[in-house]
Length: 570
Ligand code: SRM
Ligand code: SF4
Image (cartoon, rainbow, N blue to C red; front, side):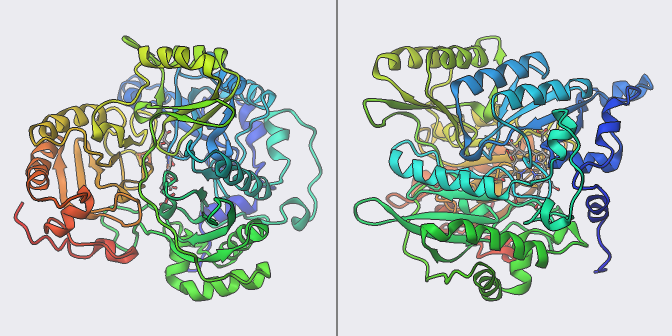
């Protein structure tokens, strides 16, 4: 491995705190794109340059430029917004976007299809509702997630407060966003320490992700993230501190075993007053220790594998001045959402809705976007986005509950009967994702319909089984911590992974490679049959596939690629 800095490092260094030539590029009318270096920088402002891949070959044939547009990802700590903010995002998506809103696996909204000339007006509207897209992408701390569990209102409020504090503390301080997108006045550059006291000029070696979880729900999939906080409560239910997890991540590359998903380690316990200091120390250690020459080895998970957890913990304690205590016991039970109504305080209720793969739009027979608009006009409380690409209408007064439920039911937003569909997630993939090797969001719903026939034949239709699909191995729907993981290998072909834990604490293992889409049901049907016939009381599907010998148990990290260990014939 060479120590030469990666190209992205040079782009960041030369960017004058993320300005690059973005302002000039926006004025360039001859193309719908921006220059390559700015394509990297614009991510730090929460945007990606994309093109419609369905139109690529036709446009190439006609010698036309690709159908370029931008995706904007809003920053929304804990996924919580109010109804007025929802309505504004809905308006923006229909006025400047492609008439859809996409709820993401990290509790926010993506707007797709915004052409270059509409970027500023869109971001100004977003700014007017006190939201922004700063650091929603790029080599910085991203949207901080927080468990959405509706049954734990008081604890949720505390967890959300921590998520918001960490988000505010780690948001880049460069004025570039305001200058470029909101026509703010140019503020003269200063010394590095003044402009970005935490990140410095070259920010982090790679993206960085933080979550806050409230057991027993692991709805945020804490073990898939760089840094996590697990709420530890006393007998009365009050939070007495946080267990800290570090070094989780999903991304890998097919055929490159030195890249792998990894579940986070529990590093210790801290008191509430020290939680933000720990976040800053973890981030700065990664800033200084992370690999800046090889972007495929730059995430915190590799820093921890290379340096060891003990050395990392010692350095975090040294920098923060916090003495981490041994981790306290905790139990997670599931990663899914708790659908339907749950009771909040003061007679208010929370309704968790099912949004298939997070896509909010109006199509024939299902007007989800219009329905959500109606709900947001009726309801003056919160709307929460969950880490499972779902929505919660929170704090609904008793007299509005029946009407909210009626609107949701008519739009198909109530949870379905199928245990598989209730626990399914797919990443965006085609046509907007430039890295997709196979379909995901547009294919998983049909696959679930086919798998449901098989499950139903074995009497398993209502069983909660977690299935996740991604169009490439980057893992945006966290497929390696799903009981059934399908990862795109090429058009119509997927790798099938089995054996992850239902509570999100264990990675899966490769069961079958390069399965054609038509073969997925026949690969899984005999395993469903065996599960129905042989499972022990309460045994989860992921645990069963290991005990029954379909795959070996994955320990951690590099172990992921080791022998599948299958003892049972396919
Ligand atoms: Fe992701 C890149 C979509 C969550 C790992 N991800 C992308 C890009 C931006 C493609 C690109 O770089 O050009 C995708 C845009 C598709 C599109 O058209 O919208 C994309 N990622 C998504 C979303 C929208 C998937 C979804 O269906 O919800 C999620 C947005 C989250 C958010 O709101 O911030 C999303 N991405 C994730 C997650 C899950 C998570 O964070 O909990 C992961 C795995 C966890 C992790 O980071 O390890 C993830 N995305 C990646 C990676 C691989 C990173 C790595 O370490 O190797 C890439 C590619 C990269 O960074 O080079 C990527
Ligand atoms: Fe795109 Fe791959 Fe992420 Fe899916 S997993 S959205 S295909 S980068």
